[in-house]
Image (tube, rainbow, N blue to C red; front, side):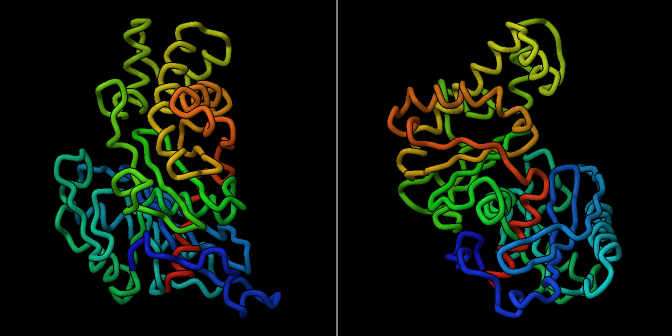
Length: 325
């Protein structure tokens, strides 16, 4: 099933989970360019929590078999930590970044600076074999969709009919949720529901708002190369250069997303990812950018930082799997 297929996510979990008994255990993983977190999630009615997790770093340019072995090892480690009824050969929901064929379980990773040695590989089959599972038990969901579903079900977007979730870090990930369903092919969302291909000031959005873009802008301003975390810390301390760089970046982000937030009639935008940990600094500039694009949208739009942080894609993947099974 496609990760943007309609899912009854607003429904409660199956009745056997609502009787006060043990939670249903769901095995999930969140794969990034250089790290994997695998987890066992306990689903109980309308609540969920990470029961156990295991993580591992990967070399995105390493041999394909090495990357697959590390991924499978993290999955087995999470199951071992959970104990009880958790099993490595159970159904898995894997949150995976683009470019990826989520139906077939095959990546097309040429020219994206990661996983080039896995391009064209049957990742579903390879992981299933390593976990002792049937290939049909290993399913894939877009990582930003999983993040958004997690926040909509259990976090900062809960209670909103239409929500947009963005993840800010090495790039800008996004998902547009209509009653919990990721929307990718509709006139009121960007192509594929993704904002990273949008343009601002005549160039790609990620040339203005991303880790590399902010670091580069600060270096141009000051001659110093440092991390976004350090730049945010300097902004918090009142540093003028850091403030100019970050206010410019997030004003541009708001101006770029404003028309789409208005068209989608979103009532909340949730910011996740590493940069979002300083969202209180960035929110005013972002809202000002939205206001320039669409004042009415800016006036009604709720802005929130992620409540779940790194747990969001894990809980979201578990919810997606249980509702789409």
